[in-house]
Amino acid sequence: MTQYGLMPKFSRISAHEASSLFFAHLAGERRLSEKTVESYQRDLASFLGFLTLHLDQPIHLKELSEIRLRDFRSFLAHLQRGDSGLSASSVARRLSAIRTFFKYLNRRYGLENNAISLVKGPKVKAPLPKPLSVSGAGDMVTEGTIDERPWVRSRNTAVLMLLYGAGLRISEALSITGSDLPLGQSMSLTGKGGKTRIVPILPAVIEAINQYIALCPYPVANDQPLFRAIKGGPLSARQVQRDMQKLRGYLGLPETATPHALRHSFATHLLAGGGDLRTIQELLGHENLSTTQRYTGVDIDGLRQTVRAAHPRSR
Image (tube, rainbow, N blue to C red; front, side, top):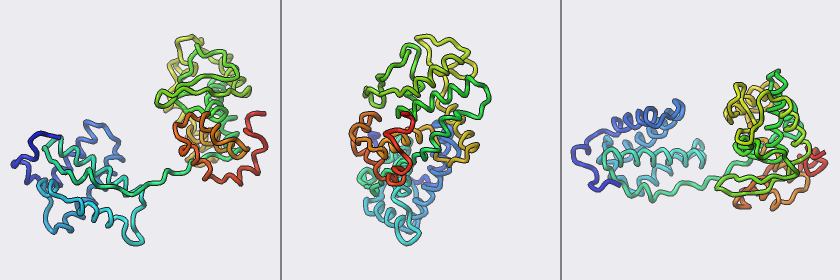
């Protein structure tokens, strides 16, 4: 917060002018994507348009500094009213954009509005994980990539096997170095929040990694990442995502078929096969059991009919 508050010379700057500078700030200094900036524009246009009608006057910085808690609540109620009302997640996103705008106004103009910090948005339920089917996950892991080079195919298969066969995050799989080899029946990983966990490594995963090492044209050194890009540098998560985007189109899989969906599939298929929720929590490295419990909302009954063991890649 600035020490002096909104200076008189800024009080008659229009909200439209201030928001235009805000959007330029997002695109220029913060380098947000064009679509993200457009989303901010829609959210703020909705808010400022409502205020103009609600207060029955043009909106300047002075009016923005004087908005009361009940005015914000009226706006949120307006968004959720009627058959065409926004979902809780959409309202929460719009409120987040408004908060970001007010923080910008505070830094640039010294505008203070304590009411915005008191506004409580709607409770948003965490979306259910979107795992792949057992056959879809199997096809994706087996194919690996549409690239015809044998070492690239084996590399991608090994990476995807770590996501689906061990439940790793893509960042965790790509953090493996030569010093972690040879892989045994388990490995120690440090995940989000610096939390360390022990992850069992299935024989099929070890076999996939060994096949990649045998075909990889680059030497595996202790201080180098295991998975390498075409030119020899570290393989990036973005490249894995791009490869999976092409592969899911080739296989006819939905847009939800992402690297993280394979981790979701690991947990969901284990649960469907009779896995214990606490054990799955430990395997995934979740801090809270409530995070793992989201998998119970997936169509477990349907998956049970297709999963014949604790994990389809364990055989």
